[in-house]
Length: 315
Image 1 (tube, one colour):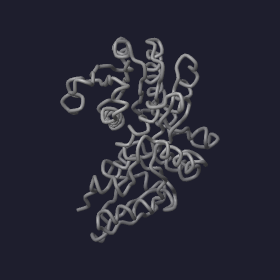
Image 2 (tube, rainbow, N blue to C red; image 1 turned 135 degrees about the vertical axis):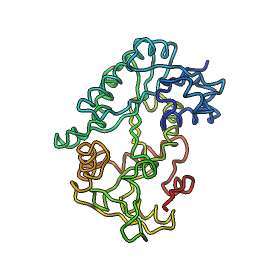
Image 3 (cartoon, one colour; image 1 turned 30 degrees about the vertical axis):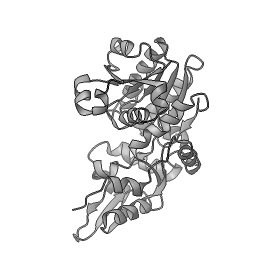
């Protein structure tokens, strides 16, 4: 008998990838019925054709409405849970509390397995040096909370790196035209040799798919979901080759770089500083990313392949 898989954030980058991966997988599509959870059912159906399918049940729910969560999670066997960061002064507590509500209701409704989209704890990995990375810490705290619920509920975790689409969707991360008008410059506070994990968000379903296919094997495990670690210079070189434009990476003084950010300057600067000093996933980042890529359900996308399929236009 097929199990019911609830997917939170069904219309977002992570949730939509998971739904598509399950629907397109000959084995998983027979093992799981999908319940897509979103805040606005009508908008979700209009936005995503896959959610109009008869094999996907679309349900409205929000962490601020406990009753809606109870209805959405009734009869669910496995739930993919993700939370949205808040960059307000109390953002860490806001995100953690919202996620805890979802998880508590899931346990009350008898959900047996939770797959949570998490992130590492800079506070813990840096020995307390970096404390402002609240969008990381809120998820790391919720991961610990979920792990503490064992044996009531089993769990596994996906910890995505930086999305490759950020080079297109976040101008302050992508290349900008240089003053000479002939070249393009990607800037940051990090050394050109600093490695950053990159993932095509469309691959999220490949990592979650591995857990869905073998839940017992991956119980308690964390997939550091990234294709590989790319240095800032390597990423610039790949963009240059893909676009046919001269793209260079330039390290800026931290305060100068942060002053150009459109939001959360202190938070983002501290996050990049943490990555520079301690590594995105800590000292074993390369090893952890390699294991995750090898255990994904299908080949993961390289940065070169992503740019070939999603051209970065530099005009």
